[in-house]
Length: 205
Image (cartoon, rainbow, N blue to C red; front, side):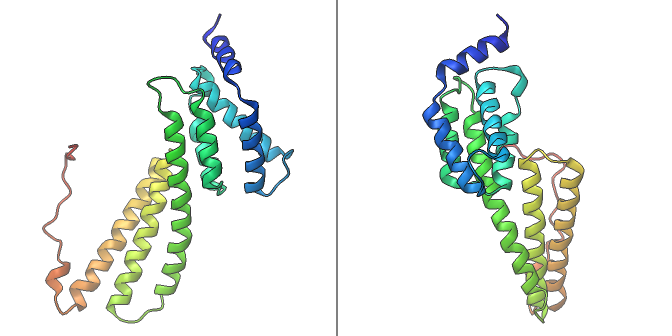
């Protein structure tokens, strides 16, 4: 038998229809669609693909990441994420950790998207504040938004050039914030980080 045939047989032997059906119901509620909708079917197919990959099927190695990306981008609830993770653990083999990677990546994405919405609102409000402290706060909030965007792209295995662009823009905002402190603070030395240098070789302790 091929590796794929063995994986499929193993998947079928472990399949739990009760948990599978319960997850489908949860996803329908989270997406606010009917249980029979195409969107629910697409998610359930990705869950099946992830389960097959955990049974060592070679065709679906990245299915867990596609599933995590969808769940994070579509605000799938924490209880549903937990239910999916518990279901995937049925299939996970010793030494594999992709079920846990799915859970943690999805929750990180979910909270990051929530943070981005909050940060964008904060940036908008801070934009009108007068005085150097307000301008500095505006730059720092904008930097935070850009850095969270970069983190999201890292989690979903996004484009490296886009990630670099967001990191560069974030650093420019941080630099702008420090310049506000240097120019206008009664203690400008508190915002002087000119002696700090990025190491050429990162410390990986």
